[in-house]
Image (cartoon, rainbow, N blue to C red; front, top):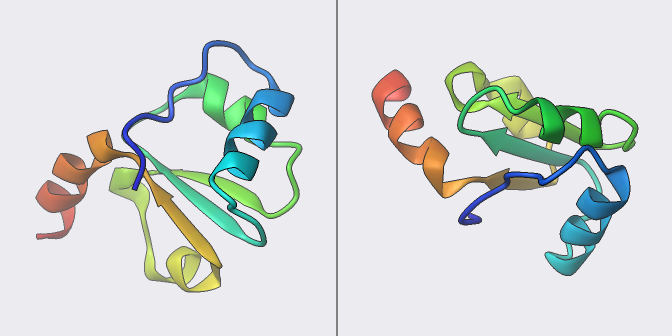
Length: 83
Protein backbone atom coordinates (compact mmCIF):
# COMPACT_ATOMS: atom_id res chain seq x y z
CA UNK A 1 0.00 0.00 0.00
CA UNK A 2 1.38 3.39 -0.99
CA UNK A 3 -0.08 6.80 -0.35
CA UNK A 4 0.22 8.15 -3.87
CA UNK A 5 1.51 6.94 -7.24
CA UNK A 6 1.27 10.23 -9.11
CA UNK A 7 4.19 10.90 -11.43
CA UNK A 8 5.39 14.46 -12.03
CA UNK A 9 6.47 13.62 -15.58
CA UNK A 10 6.70 10.67 -17.93
CA UNK A 11 10.03 9.25 -16.76
CA UNK A 12 10.69 5.54 -16.63
CA UNK A 13 13.85 6.20 -14.62
CA UNK A 14 11.83 7.87 -11.85
CA UNK A 15 9.45 4.91 -11.66
CA UNK A 16 12.37 2.46 -11.57
CA UNK A 17 13.86 4.40 -8.66
CA UNK A 18 10.52 4.46 -6.85
CA UNK A 19 10.06 0.71 -7.25
CA UNK A 20 13.65 0.08 -6.16
CA UNK A 21 13.11 2.16 -3.01
CA UNK A 22 10.09 -0.03 -2.21
CA UNK A 23 12.13 -3.16 -3.02
CA UNK A 24 9.46 -4.16 -5.54
CA UNK A 25 10.95 -6.66 -7.96
CA UNK A 26 9.65 -9.44 -10.15
CA UNK A 27 6.18 -9.10 -11.60
CA UNK A 28 4.70 -5.92 -10.13
CA UNK A 29 1.03 -5.05 -10.51
CA UNK A 30 0.39 -1.37 -9.86
CA UNK A 31 -3.23 -0.55 -9.01
CA UNK A 32 -3.97 3.10 -9.80
CA UNK A 33 -7.08 4.99 -8.73
CA UNK A 34 -7.91 6.11 -12.27
CA UNK A 35 -6.43 6.68 -15.67
CA UNK A 36 -2.96 8.08 -15.10
CA UNK A 37 -1.27 8.54 -18.45
CA UNK A 38 2.06 9.56 -16.91
CA UNK A 39 2.21 6.44 -14.76
CA UNK A 40 1.13 4.15 -17.60
CA UNK A 41 3.64 5.62 -20.06
CA UNK A 42 6.42 5.49 -17.48
CA UNK A 43 5.75 1.79 -16.86
CA UNK A 44 5.18 0.61 -20.42
CA UNK A 45 8.87 -0.12 -21.11
CA UNK A 46 9.44 -1.91 -17.82
CA UNK A 47 9.40 -5.64 -18.13
CA UNK A 48 7.30 -7.19 -15.39
CA UNK A 49 5.49 -3.99 -14.41
CA UNK A 50 1.80 -3.74 -15.27
CA UNK A 51 -0.48 -0.81 -14.42
CA UNK A 52 -4.20 -1.41 -13.99
CA UNK A 53 -7.04 0.81 -12.81
CA UNK A 54 -8.80 -0.09 -9.57
CA UNK A 55 -12.13 -0.63 -11.35
CA UNK A 56 -10.49 -3.07 -13.81
CA UNK A 57 -8.72 -5.27 -11.29
CA UNK A 58 -9.12 -8.98 -11.93
CA UNK A 59 -8.12 -12.24 -10.30
CA UNK A 60 -5.81 -13.38 -13.11
CA UNK A 61 -3.61 -10.27 -12.91
CA UNK A 62 -3.50 -10.46 -9.11
CA UNK A 63 -2.44 -14.12 -9.15
CA UNK A 64 0.25 -13.50 -11.80
CA UNK A 65 1.84 -10.69 -9.76
CA UNK A 66 4.65 -11.22 -7.28
CA UNK A 67 4.04 -7.77 -5.77
CA UNK A 68 0.74 -5.91 -5.63
CA UNK A 69 1.25 -2.16 -5.27
CA UNK A 70 -2.03 -0.41 -4.42
CA UNK A 71 -2.47 3.35 -4.10
CA UNK A 72 -4.44 4.47 -1.08
CA UNK A 73 -6.68 6.56 -3.34
CA UNK A 74 -7.84 3.42 -5.16
CA UNK A 75 -9.31 1.77 -2.05
CA UNK A 76 -12.71 3.56 -2.21
CA UNK A 77 -13.07 2.56 -5.87
CA UNK A 78 -12.16 -1.04 -5.11
CA UNK A 79 -14.62 -1.13 -2.20
CA UNK A 80 -17.40 0.27 -4.37
CA UNK A 81 -16.80 -2.01 -7.35
CA UNK A 82 -15.98 -5.27 -5.59
CA UNK A 83 -18.00 -5.07 -2.35
